[in-house]
Amino acid sequence: MLTGPFLDRSWMGQNPDYNSSEIVMLGLPFDGTVSYRSGSRFAPEQIRLASWGLEEYSPRFDRHLEDVNFHDAGDLEFPLGNTYKSLDVIRRNVEDIYADGKRVFGIGGEHLVTLPEVEAVYKYHSNLAVVHFDAHTDLREEYLGEPMSHSAVIRHISKIVGPENVKQIGIRSGMKEEFEFMTKHKTLIHEYSGLDVLKGKKIFVTVDLDVLDTSVMCGTGTPEAGGMQFNELMGWFEYLKNFDIIGADVVELAPDYDASGVSTAVATKVIRELLMVM
Image (cartoon, rainbow, N blue to C red; front, side, top):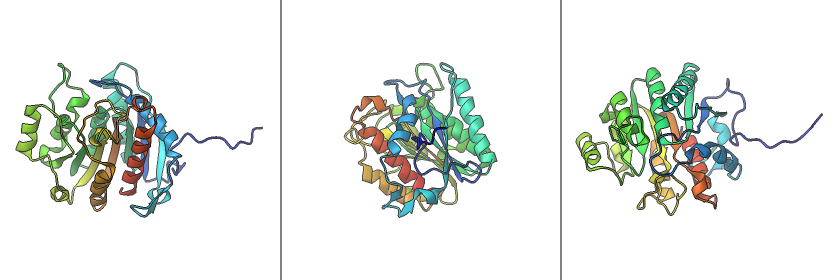
């Protein structure tokens, strides 16, 4: 009989018992609608491996991963080539998480995975708002005739929660019509205080890693210069710790575009710090 020890392929610091956990980490390795560089489907696995290079303690938030009490459920399996069935798999599994009285932390994958997550969360929390970190507006009605696109994810979400319950941070790329949408509905904010209108709401936080500058995060599907530095993003997280965050995800790492592994390491720390404020 083998005695080990054996390497753990789960996120470090997780609670191995689903039933006693409060947050469920769910790998969402889907990138079927990516419009530029594919490869984010490989992110959840690489992030788990990279997590073992981090400490379990966050000095910024003075919390330990044991304090978070999250369970890593692993990666969902998707029918390759079928976007709608893949989204349905996400929706059903996230609904199960909330039916069990827990919260989801999704690891993408491309940004379209956020749509079925929000649909599922909204079923249990109708007083829902979405805080969206991204380089891109993601407010198109469709992309090349296809409405189910990562370029349209926030537009679809705004129809669920209402555009008044969407706040967007770090946006620096999009079509003129999308910027007009943000102006009309006042979704784009630049100061922490812009989040204050969401106090009293249940908050879902979605982080597209290309919100970070390409000098920090080059391993992503649609890199966009002119973004945040890591500590700027952490400042927003620090402000959000006083809000009622009932779900989150981190998406759009494409690890193979950064052979150094730095982008994956950055993504992993973003996840750890966001877990600390939930």
